[in-house]
Length: 154
Length: 476
Image (cartoon, rainbow over the protein chains, first blue to last red):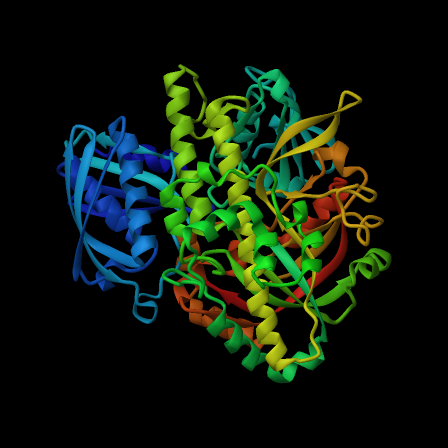
């Protein structure tokens, strides 16, 4: 059940290395990033979003795009960040695999590296429509590392 | 879902009487197996919706109900503006007016069989689909405004299709009350290059054959014949709709927080229909509906061109175009008095019964066609709205089979290439640029569409007219 899966992820006692994962949701996909800082967790959540579409290792960080957004609180900031990324991906027709996030209170500035979509090479499996508020969490875990996650509509 | 938590009214109808903050009951339609297999979140969501302000009669879940955002997918709920009724962006969804349209080719399966590989390749090459695809049309600002106001009527005026198509689309292809100025610049920018694109995920264009006719009279009225080839298109309002959904879900959630409105689930974010944000959303959502109508109209035009080259005798008349993520104002009987209510159908299809004045004259005696997509290896169905459907769920029915497992699990269980080969051996040609995408959409990842449709019929929501088997499936 999702609620158990999320509870286990949030309450995990050992720190995880920097990383990301996808977690199951019936109709759509859960994305999760974790790292020593909330910025790192936000970066990894974005890699997870790319992974919902294609293998991030196949996305070359050829071009850099600056993005920024703001929100009322840190959780809405994650949603706003991911939706900004979805917008840039859609309008530039690009995929991104590397991110440098800077968070100042509830304002976020990002440099993102990626390349134009190459259908033959990337074989995108699906399109992310937007980030939802389902399973939305940005927390510092008991081990001290940060987790950032939500379900994205695909 | 534990059946013991529900009150069994019949083999296909289950109630949850008002408790806690629910002001109306929740009603779940489905047979025992289907309802048992529904996840617990459906129970939670259908009862949460029953507690929203101004809801009338009941909160409904269709036989294909599963976990959604605030509302269950397969959720139907009507709200009375005079009772403080609300409108919810989550109750419509991220893909505003996602829907299905079905075209009648006039060809038989035997006629297309010698050219089915050529047809599959032509459709795959020329119907824009998948991430990164663009339509051949880039709209200027005035064209965007005109499209958002005019919907399929705009598309026909631009040369995509014929006038006769319009009466076969809900709202005659043009949703009144659209306000393009309430659609953000970002949403318009996102749509600029996406007109006439299929999208990805569970969207498709499918060539089908009528495999079985259940109701000969209605089938004849719809123009369906056993062995006839049809084309069905499943897609929605593309990036524009997604952006509208994203923005208003956020704005409504923030507005609720500002007003101190406590919701059991943030994604139930909603606003009183009469409020400024409620009215803004209505205007934008209606523009999104027009975008979906225009999109499916353009894709139909592209499909007709492809068929015209390969099969010059093919007609491709439009049977009907249904939407399954909308909020519409309709008149329904509430306590014996007909009044306008705002009906959210989230992953549910409108199903007007025979005689309904909003149906075009040729279809009026038979009821509205209800087009149900199955998975790419199983079956799709054409149903018809029934006279009882209004009383059962405000003239609503299911929309498809619904997923039975996550994409992640589907990818673990199936390989796309093997599925494509397996289906080809059964005479079903799949074209997709992503084998992982094919695996995620494996037939086994979906519920039993036959059971869903049987349940819809047994519950009186819509009646079976024909079963369609897939021949060619183009996936984004």
